Image (tube, rainbow over the protein chains, first blue to last red):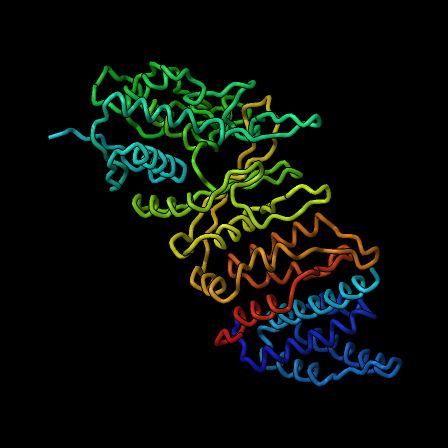
Length: 110
Length: 379
């Protein structure tokens, strides 16, 4: 099991938050990210999510800072052999963040 | 010099635990027990043996039954039907014997008199004489023993019946009264019992004494979590529904966890009270990195109660809670934490059946991930 640096953990956490926020509007992007089987596919889907984040930012008042996704792509290239482990950590953060958004929304409506 | 009785260790998860339990019962009545490759104690007089049999008899009701409140408000004692201790409503083997015969068996076993013994015990290979009709090995004596039906034994030409000496029968029967952590998943009719696997008898005894301080016998488990007020104003208690959650909840309540990293999980499924044969499965839980688990417990307060148990899985479409997935995700998270397997833990976060895991606090999940995956474990 790869042990990451503190800064690398921070990159994964921030990327997870961006992915989670995008998935709140486009859940299929999260499904597709989960379905990736190689580092290349993972990076490709991250690029799609980055573009989606920018387009959401243009449509709504909410703006997204996509730099963590670019840093995450560098991180995947660094740990190409263990990109699966990065995916696991990012998916945990992203799903947790999405769950927090959805749960707080349903809590507000009640 | 007083003569001593020595019961050697079996090197088997079930009988070693049973032997430890007998030693514990003897210590309870003031007998000094020497724990070395088994148990060794002084020859017992009849009053001590009587006391021992009485104590065993007193444990049968609280350990093998539970209270049920009927619709009219009356309380009855229901049998734990999933345990293979009964047949057609009656206790079997040693547990079902009359107190007088129980006493006779114990006097016979715990004395040094040597009678004519002809048969060989299939379990301990000692010679014995079946004077008390307790020799047939059933699941009461050894829970994973095959039944007496050839069709259930797998290989039809094999000898389907095994025979045990009264000592093994006694030990096997009383182990059901021991304080091993258990949990019942009533929806799936599956029950889990955990047994510590420690080779050294003294270490096993010390560990089980720590365990005995933690257990509280309740209907569906003896390791209880927090209680909460239910919908009808009745105080409800939380308990684990699978083996890994049970282990995590147990570790949470124990002072130290590093003494036992090997466990045996006995899974019993099916609760039909009319059949004696139950479906029993054995699984070994070998915790790969107990020190990293201990570090998690040191840094994160009650990871089961505060993190795993608080989670729920809800539908992204209807907002309803999916109880089956909630249970499965709790299992995956607990298994991941215990087996130091982040992949299994992360699986719980996968969106499945349009349902998402929620209900956890970032104050719990962020430190846990950092502790697990960060180089210096910084929080």
